[in-house]
Image (tube, rainbow over all chains, first blue to last red):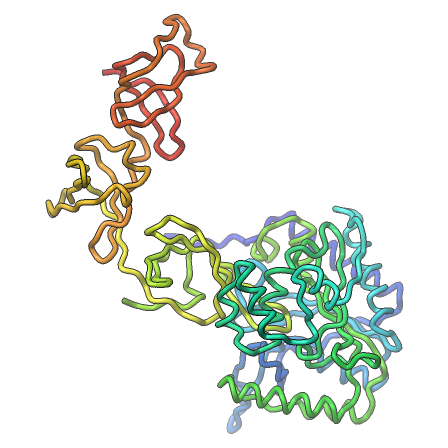
Amino acid sequence: MQSAWQPSCSIETLHLRARLLAKIRAFFLEKAVLEVETPLLSHTIGTDPSLAFFATSYDLPPFQHRLFLQTSPEFAMKRLLAVGCGSIYQIAKAFRNGESGRFHNPEFTLLEWYRIGFTLSDLMDEVAELIVSLFADYQPLVSVERCSYQAIFQQYTGLDALVFCYADYCAYALANELPEAVALCEHDHALWLDVLFSHKVQPYLGDNALCMIYGYPACQSSLARLNADNPLVTDRVELFINGIELGNGFYELTDAIEQNQRFDAEIAIRQQRNLPEVLKDDRLIAALNAGLPECSGIAIGLDRLLMLLSKTASIDEVLSFSIHSA
Amino acid sequence: MASYSTSEFKAGLKVMLDNDPCAIIENEFVKPGKGQAFNRVKIRNLKTGRVIERTFKSGESLEGADVVEMEMQYLYNDGEFRHFMNNETFEQYQCDEKIVGDAGKWLKDQDACTVMLWNDAPIGVTPANFVELKIVETDPGVRGDTSGGGGKPAKLETGAVVRVPLFVQTEEMIKVDTRTGEYISRVKE
């Protein structure tokens, strides 16, 4: 029997991807944002307990090093920002172990960019400008919406996302066909928010529109800054179109001490959950010590963007070869 | 029985959920970029036929269910139970109407059908996709009308009622698709 060798996407989609990349590069060229490349293979990896990584071994007899495929180009890009290279962007592959499904492939393409001197709100303006222009030729978006996490969560569930009331959350889950959430989430506020948001809020966000949700609860974000006016929320934004999560951005944390503490906290969680051990990225801490300029940054999943542009139901249909046939 | 992790939940897999045998219909991996991973699973309870959605933490597992579907011959109805026979082993099984459910109205003595067994006890019956049954009652139609438009109800020998074209008459054999309950054609005897 012959193996299936054909790509999982159509030739048309190959062209669509090429045009998308060209438009993104033209967009940033015009704004004088520098395109960079950073390593996919590194000695350290992010500590985020929700991201599983691929590790490999680098053999240089008599030595052997453990190297990681990057889950995001974030740390390397921040080290570039710290030397004063100005605003930068990158179109890069990222790798996340165990993620496979209709919207996930363990190897995927990210567009990540950082804007020096931008607040999160400035960055949201630029995101809207880019996304609206990318959709204009295919299926123009009807609007751009901005809403706080607390307001949208309240609107769809009636619950307060910032103040965890276990009894209220349980009562809501039992009354709304999610009884399993009670046993699944127990007293973990962040997990409750993940389950309720992804089941009861996210599917309704951005009906042919770009929906930007900002002000994520503090328990949900490791690299964002706490909001100066309300320490219960962070300066973090997520993008949604037609219920699909498309990107995640931050007003970046520049405080090395705070970053170091968050690394330690995440490493502790990894130990608690028996996840593979990682060492914190001392080079990132050193770069923050040297001084990361005030900036905002965001990463957008280009494969999912292509799914939306080509109206396809599965990520496999926009990848030359998905993990099943790679 | 083996157990299966969320990543092995493929459509058709039979697993135990809340002490009932179930079949996976759909399995969606859900993972917020900065959050934990879940699997949103659509699952059919094989005893009740009810479809529910259930969310699992990724990596959770369920025990497999010993469910097999077997070709059998429908033998007869004794008034309380319907009797079926495995044509290879000649082993016989009996089912009450609750288990036979909707399939009952398509079952004619000696016809082949599929019986679902859980731990060797019947939990469901599926008739053949196409059955040939005799019309026992229908209004006399106009003989010349072969257009097939309109149609009329016809009662079949097993009790089912289907819509047939006007030209089809009582005592005729017809072929019916049991999945849709639709008339397909007359059967020449």
